[in-house]
Image 1 (cartoon, rainbow, N blue to C red):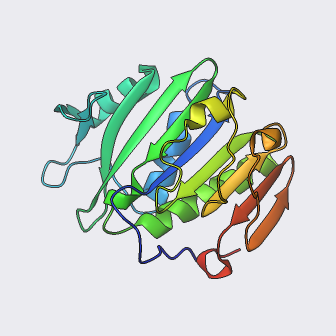
Image 2 (image 1 turned 30 degrees about the vertical axis):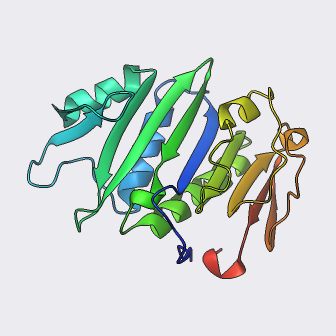
Length: 205
């Protein structure tokens, strides 16, 4: 079971990358995972409406769920919020470019549900690895690597030479981009990937 450490700040984040092998699949997988771990895109008090934001995350608009799903499928980048049953909100982004996609979650803002979200991301990473689909997963509770451009790591245009982060799921293709100590107290070998996690008591399975 994932347990969010006491030092979680507003800056903590999780990000997941993969290739767009099936058109439209990325947003389906993302929304299904969020719903499975206890989130809904519907605004508290306004069922059927979703809060989306512009690229600055400063301007919002509320759109119908049906329009949201269509927008999420078509937009190259979209910021939006989902909610727990206790009305704690999670800021999310889905981005697509050049045949790959990236999900981003501002988990430090989340009052409740961050542990279940990370569990869901790890499960997806494992499942996709066993399905021979390449992914990159990073969970950085303290934002120790907040200046890293993970897009450039994914594109093999930069290297990461910092410390091991809380969760790091790295494919064989990307292993040369990690020059720092790619180690963790738990390591799981998956088809074409390594999954490393900082503490054994944070993860089940």
